[in-house]
Image (cartoon, rainbow, N blue to C red):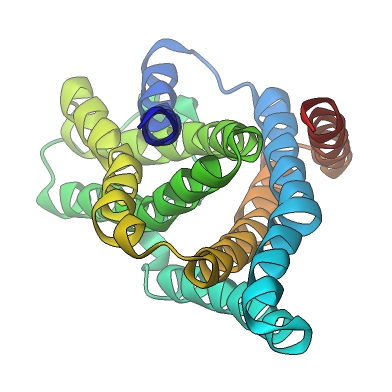
Length: 268
């Protein structure tokens, strides 16, 4: 039960980071683009390293032990690319105008000529929050299952997810505030969209845990690796480069990988 509680709390922590982004949007005067670029790069570095070096091979070990060397390896590869396909399809069906990964800045909160009480803009803001919630749901499952298997990996993923949820919180708050002029409503919807991650953890507890065998764990873990790599390459790195110069985001990637590598050795 302690392991389950830790896994759930880490998933909750990662989800609530959208609220942090929303608060920053309200209280910061300008966006610290250099910090966000480096932080998003660091988050991508952590995710890529832990996925390719640890999670993928833990999945492979579990599946080959149950299914044999060749069949287990094939299932690992299939699960990895199935995870990529799954999160890619989610992004595919999110409309571009409400994609929470489009870069928004806190300066946008103060743009002159904001159209207040505009139902069309409010609808767009609501779709942005909904898109983020849909996207966060599988991330919640991934964070929970990873922590349950290995707390060291789970903590790293939770921190990486939390970092990339901060600009997503800004992305939800800006259009809703722009549409309504209501900071409380913008914060509330941003905060609620982040709760999709602990809801994903609850689904994992109620549905997946009773059936969690070595084979199911291996398949889920291989999919988690694919999801994390896809998020890093498709969302985090492009966003990091849009916020600031490309080199700073790459320095963040290298730092994230180095931190993850040292952490795994020290915690082994």
